[in-house]
Image (spheres, one colour):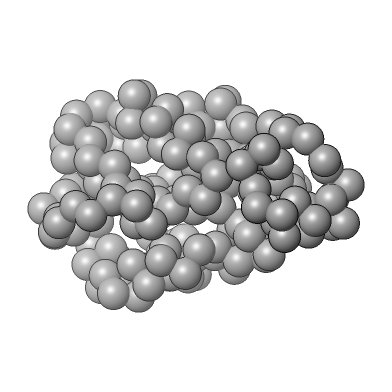
Length: 164
């Protein structure tokens, strides 16, 4: 199985999640940070596509939205996994997930994951630190990254391919 993971990581949390997904996935995996990596790839060459990002000011990164829009029709034909790194949990996290990914993709996805998040204040610029402090009261690095959710997500995808 060939898997493509496309993601955006602003401060490293989504990248940590992708590293775990990549380690636990069966088969060949290519992970591409759409913000940083200058890798040429063709989505059609992969059996499985995993898309992930994080929430900043209530929205997923623009590069993720652009990737989805550009490859929408092809994505509908793939084994698809969608995940989100966000600080919130429960209803708020579900609302953010639903806002981040189009309904039709969420419906055809074989695995959806909400992986928790981090406030990496040490990696934020001044304005980001002020916003995080005002909105959440957080002034130092904090993590609630959910490795169990990540493993459950990967197991769903691996199981789908084990039964093919």
